[in-house]
Figure (cartoon, rainbow, N blue to C red):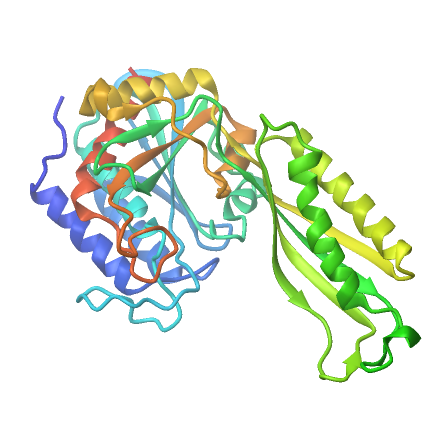
Amino acid sequence: MSLIEQEGQLHQQMRDWRRDLHRHPETAFEEHRTAKIVASLLTEFGLEVHTGIATTGVVATLKGNLPGEDAIALRADMDALNLQELNTFDHCSVNPGKMHGCGHDGHTCMLLGAAKHLAEHRDFAGTVVFIFQPAEEGEAGARAMCEQGLFERFPVKAVYGMHNWPGLESGEFAVHSGPVMASMDVFDITITGKGCHGGMPHLGVDPVAIAGQLITSLQSVVSRTMNPLQSGVISITRMKGGEAYNVVPDSATLSGTCRAFSKETQDLIESRMRRLVESICQAYGATGALDYRRVYPSTVNDPEHADICANVAKGLVGEEKVNLTPDPSMGAEDFAFMLQERPGAYVWVGNGSSEGGKGLHNPYYDFNDDILPRGANYWVELARAQLA
């Protein structure tokens, strides 16, 4: 069974594709140029290509030469971030305020490389479905694809995802048996008091002071309400109240995000937050309203499929370079929606050092082109293993 060579022709092609995509980043549901390039290459490779799913999503299918009816799906995300790139290399972004700061350009090209290789070596039974997804960064492109009948149109027994991971050595893998990424909820708290002169606060009800009480009290939800052996985060990331130095405003708002690894923890956080908002505001003579929105569920691997992925990775890089007990991340990932539709697993492939601004969502980040063959070979061997 052939593999994609390090520094071979296909590696050079993947590098060229990747740097072109990095130079022309496109954000959620605007990945028109990216989708056109992806569809054109897949057509050139000989796959059956479908476009326009969730606006800019691309799905392609490839049938093996061996008899078999099973199908699996491999997914890559295509979108960039609303982030101004500060790199100065030749392939830095030419689109102001947009940047591939999370490596989706690399994810796209690893899956393209795998598609090209498998099209040339169809030594598998059944069908591989290649999903190129838009709008992962906060806009739930995976949910949009599922809602538009992704797995009804392309029935599969399992779906798999992969993300590069700075801080994990280049080309190593990390595979979780269970939670991988946290859920992402967002909230807005509106505190309505009574405005007055800043020098006469006794004549009003100060929503800014109440907001301060809430900021302190909300931290007790995690530290004093949740089981210490479980994980949760409440981060207040924005506060707004008032416009003048000498006016106590009528209202103030707090906004932020919550993270958890289970629905039960999400429920606990939301209910406790709602109780604190209502009771503290009432105690100070104000009214409080919590708008709590669940954006992404937790990304949870099916243990059986995690084992399959781990064994494939071990076959590529050796057992010592596959971490089976990594800590999950409090970041969020909309691949979770696909895992709610079909069993599967989501793995991390090492991108190398995260020092010197090389972490995800950093203006100095860049995907490590050296790991392109490693990621593409993982997809190839996973397809062969699942469609033997």
